[in-house]
Image (cartoon, rainbow, N blue to C red; front, side):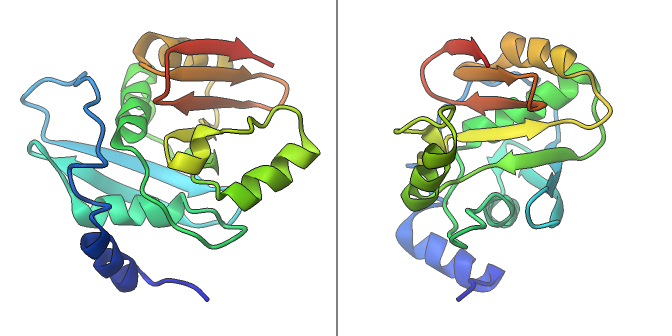
Amino acid sequence: MGVNRRQFLQWSAASGLLGNGLMSQAATLWTPQQEARTLRMLNLHTGERANVTYWEKGEYLVDGLAELYLLMRDHRQNLIAAIDVGVLDQLHCINQLVGNDQEVYLISGYRSPKTNDMLRGKSHNVAKHSLHMKGQAIDFRIPKMNLRHVHKAALASADGGVGYYPRSGYLHLDVGRKRRWSV
């Protein structure tokens, strides 16, 4: 059974998912004059697209965050979870650094424990305690951009983990402890 946007917003407000308690205190990499933070994304598994302003005039926008949470859900289980705004802010910063105004291709956002276990059974590159299960990680690529160039931007701007998967053609970004790896 799916959850529509209105149901998700009502549930999120009631549970406090969209409150300040879940939002990380990500380092601000923008000037006070910046008016908005927008992400354009394509979920490669569902074909869903979003062009979402999630932060504007110093505030995170509930509707924008909810739209991103829905897009970044575990599509295998159809489960939605809040995504740490630090991940979104870092992705936005990477877009700014590389001059990207195209869609970011989402490979993986939130993963339920069940999905994570299934993926671990298929690949040794999936962590048992993946930050995807906490909504604190994203796997992505930016089409028509050199992955190595995007990786360098991620290393320059990320406060957490950055994984480089050149053979698979994507990057991992998370808000966990600062670390780097390549597979």
